[in-house]
Length: 246
Image (cartoon, rainbow, N blue to C red):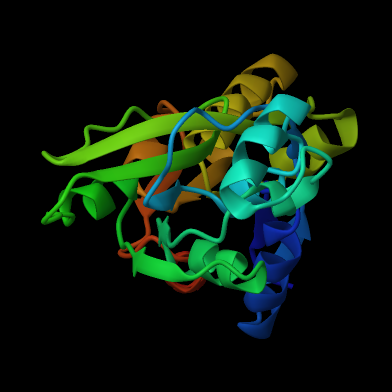
């Protein structure tokens, strides 16, 4: 059967990661410890030149806007305050953190202005607009602080939150047997480390494979090993895991 690879991320990414890993012959096991939950929000005043996305979840859950927000945005689209869901957002060009987020935006009929590699801050660092660029950032409650370059302003709206669950006894028992744990976010890394401490799971039996250095840093220390994918995408992460397992 080989080394067990535990996947902590929530859907819809969970199923995709499981499928990719199993295609590589890895012994993948789903152990989602969180889910995304929409929160009410409203669009800020004024007009925007684009939408900044660090996560596909921010767009998927953006339909939970308030009536006031829907009214504001519908005025720019010629609609009514009764508009709901993604119809409250104009199809502005999207600046996406990576390919998966860009694909999610495309599936919802948003044009793509630029796709980054290596994180949202690196994407911003590549922007050098000839005219002022005002971006609407859709994000989760727990997000990284950004430093926009000259000429770029960002208005941030929280469209979702991550809700965590505790490790149950069955989860803890499986983890005590050892394996490799995939970490797709810093929030997940912190929560997982805290839950292992609470449940008495021996960290020295577990190796961590993180999507980025900042994610690995959130899991603290004491693990059997910690490795970081060479690129911030699922394919690179699973390639790393394959090497760790064999």
